[in-house]
Length: 162
Image (cartoon, rainbow, N blue to C red; front, side, top):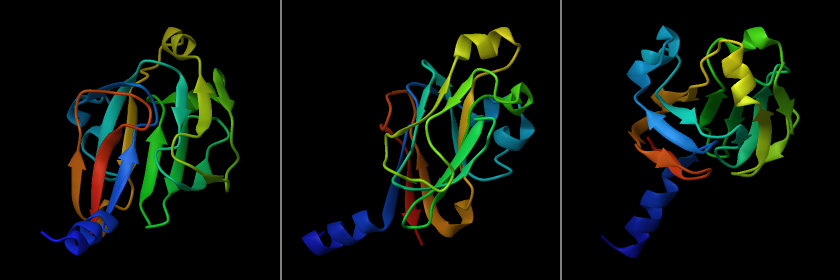
């Protein structure tokens, strides 16, 4: 493979970085059918080790729910990445969540977007597992998922464009 092919191959891929430090868990084990059956798109789930959630890629913060429980970044190459902090956490109505960004912001991979008091969320009876979804999965020829413990910005998915 020549240099041109390597460069072209890399330009056809988008790396999704981990929005939070933690352990990747099998998506099938998430206790919510919408996520576990990947109804909204291919995904991984992370059991967070801390409450700081970051941008998974460079792009525009297309959605940032006022409750802080979920946000979506659209990359320049068109990947639509949704981070859903915990399960059913929308019911907390923003309690325990602090926003550090505004919907419509241009963000860089690793920018702090939301802080969460994970212990308080758990004490209120909510699961803190965090699914990260590619909402437009069908736009990609391949989605490679990573496993194991990840730090913020470590690759969790590699998207190959069609």
